[in-house]
Image (cartoon, rainbow, N blue to C red; front, side, top):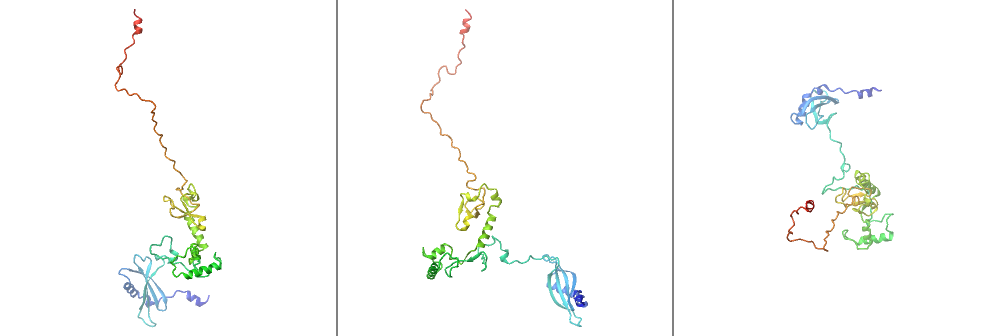
Length: 305
């Protein structure tokens, strides 16, 4: 190891006059801070030849572990120590704010509110160029070159994009197929959306695991078009946990239309009226009604002559 390397690793000895200027450094720190914020003298560090930094404890409640750093210096062969700068710096155990994260990375679903704008990157992997009629159709376009030229001619005749194309025209068909949009959902965006929806309302959720049947056989499921319709639909059960949401066909809940069909309440039998005979209703009681019959004395008379 060379002597230069040894000297570079050796701690620099602070200048004596600058190291002794503790009160000067304290006065500078108290001038920059609020009253009572500057605490005890912590340490002295040599920054260079005749350049020394004094560290003082910071008593600010919100800056735990921070230190006031006051740098002083003096000119060569001069005995007067002057102030260089005063700053508040974090110490080894300082309470620091979390690392800054760009808004595009810290944005989470549900963070947007009314009036918020969410711009998309020009190279967003979730999107791919669509067909608007302004440029030549992509190589995999469903329109042939002749139809693409006709659509471009019809687009040129439209001066306002708000105007609805004529029914049956090529532009109308392209708009119905979603081909007049500047960008459309890419295959990557389609798969990420499907994975996200399946994670929230898919077969692996606790609700689906306990469901009596899946949504594919539910009467409340509203079918959707496109390739997503092969795996997803919209729930229309107002009492279900996924009402109005896109659910996987393998999802399920206790609100399945055929899970527990309630039986009809039993209907009482109609009353039976026998009108073929007349019921007797006496107006007054008979003379013997309600009297105890006399005892039979025939056998007793026969025994005594």
